[in-house]
Length: 485
Ligand code: NAP
Image (cartoon, rainbow, N blue to C red; front, side, top):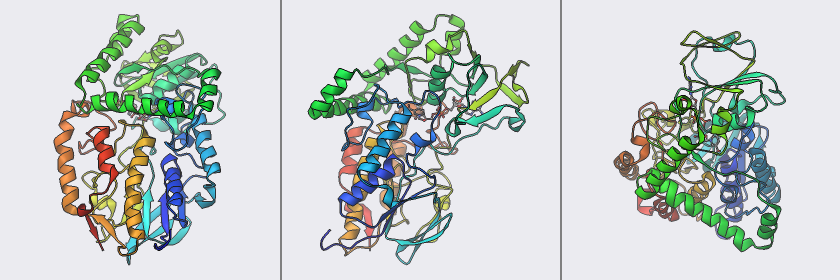
């Protein structure tokens, strides 16, 4: 970067988005970049989620960095460990680990004399010109508030804290929750355990998604023809963005109708027993909760080992789970597939902005920002996956690359030298949030269900528009919307 100011930059999180940010920053000529990662290894969600059956439900050839094609995916939907290996290989190729400080959780970031003073669990790290948060959305485990939870005598753990090395073969296993995670676990575990009890509070809509192996000939073809590999990436992204993502925000009613029909037919044709089918039939609109994609859940839940328990959980006892009908479900292991606190974002870190207010103060009534990337009063603070980021709409990697591309333009503006602080105008942020409020009622998330998209104030945390709008908004900052000093 000739003629430019060398900035000292901090990225928080060495998951898929933080690694991508580091690659892009180095490519743009920024050499003084440090990633702070709370864990001892990289990989974010793919490091933390090691439960049986963990898979990405975005087809593999669409779930990768745009700049790092991979002809080697073994399955249509890649298993979690393969995605983790992909991220490790990318980190190796770009020599990323030399810039990562592992085991360093950022505890505070304070705006002080025009820079961010960062402190981690091991102490002060000095001042940085800008901060990129890449801390993810689905990473604070949500434990259920069930009486007696600590009295269980067997093993009990959250899906994102899987007990490595524990064999479940021949055991009685109870899984609480019926989201994407529990659905994947059900497909993988039912055949190997002695008894499998799935505790369902709310039924979920499921769309079928073939996930089988990719034949060797297909891999060989993709190895030889990068153009075909790229075309496949674009096809999957386009398919998802123009159909599923547009359907759930109300921009493609025909695709939405088709999706509803597909889910209804799948349930109807897959579950034979009308009583079980009735229990598995949701009472809310398809897509209101994050749609589940599976090829084996319905089959697994009808296996002789499996039981769907819909009676309310009353309490957990030493020997198992007691439901409201008085029955004790005796278990050796309880798995909490109870999701995540998705609204905590980068907290518990304390981020204190320009006027001394913290993000906790500013977000007391819900997380709000400008275009999901910046927040008024927090100069040079750039978020991947900030408030109202598209979550559950587009592939996360595609979202992250677009958001970081936008943030990079703001960082490059800082590097040019005549500006050292950039923050969005309050008016721009107010206008954006007003537009969000107007658009959300047109989305399926607002049709009346509880979901992890909705915070405790009733705000829906996702992006209520199409991918085209997102891409256009991220293509170039509206410079008039920023205060620069
Ligand atoms: P989730 O979708 O939030 O599901 C949590 C489940 O736990 C729900 O069924 C919920 O029931 C239940 N639950 C929560 N508290 C409970 C309580 N106290 N008593 C009984 N049940 C309780 O969480 P998740 O399955 O971990 O998935 C979260 C997101 O991660 C997904 O939506 C998806 O975006 C992502 N994910 C993706 C993949 C992938 O393949 N790419 C795989 C796994 C996860 P209610 O519905 O009644 O609240």
